[in-house]
Length: 256
Image 1 (cartoon, rainbow, N blue to C red):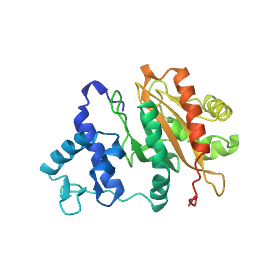
Image 2: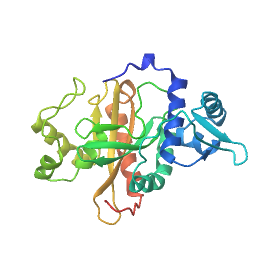
Image 3: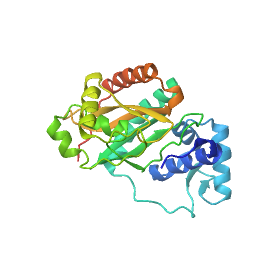
């Protein structure tokens, strides 16, 4: 379901992003680290964290000056160790991309026919509903998901891809032949696109991150933003920057 960003209360949304980071990190964090992870000014992050403390969603240790999840938060199962390792290795690149474009930068791994978001650095503005760490989306409707299919043969795509494509929006590619053609185009330009296929009002460009050991896609990285700001020229520029970024990464993490 697509959400109308007009009704999203930005301070609440950003506060939840701080909470997402604390949950995903599993260990207490400093104000500086939390502000950097969410692309928030430290003074703003402090106010949001203070409010979360007042509601007992966040705890604060005055001796170590670190924040942790509070008693009112039910913690989901932690991300796999492999995901944590990838996240730590790639996060500095996410922050650089967010500073360059001031759009939301996402990192995901593949789990079967879904992607799982393992890290997000949000835009300083909010014009579309951003994902959350741990959220899942289909391979077929997301640029991140399509990025995992780049370089595969048609028979491999058919094996990995969905048997049935359910529309997420009116723009979702539901015809399998068209979907295969789109993956082929993505492979030629070395990045994948989501043109309001997963969420109305949002476009995304993504590229795979290969394992330095095997060359197989171990994760995917994307930049997403409001569709009215993501022209094809902008998406192409972002795609080329993503390719340069990925070429500079050396991720030595086992696939399994």
